[in-house]
Length: 126
Image 1 (tube, rainbow, N blue to C red):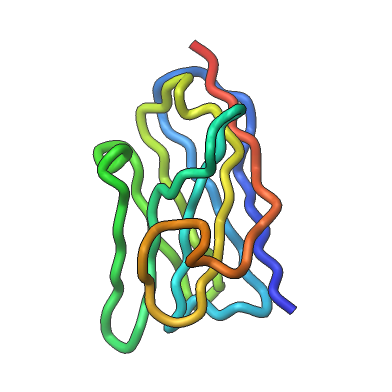
Image 2: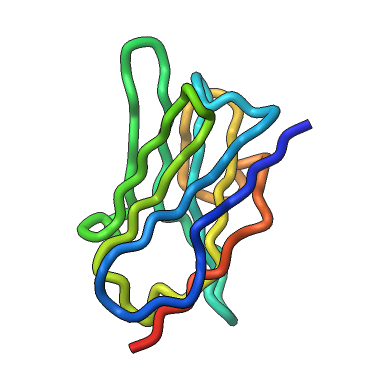
């Protein structure tokens, strides 16, 4: 059974950095795709970034809307993925989710990911 659990959310001031973690059990990050999404109140869930590690290589993609401020990484030894969020703004207030997809990364869309965590709330105040 797959469990993805997000950590690191909370209420923070604008500016500075925040790192979210996603701990996976029952779903190996090696040779699979791990994505980060967020959903703000009244808005659709949007893809932020995804990463996949295979033999001798790591593929990562960060959506252009956050590319200058967000960084995705993962530690396959601990089955943990991270989303580094820099220069937070109130527009970043949302529920943040990690999601898993079997095999290689494809499109950064919710329908491409079969496994989901319950999310962690990030609230940024100005």
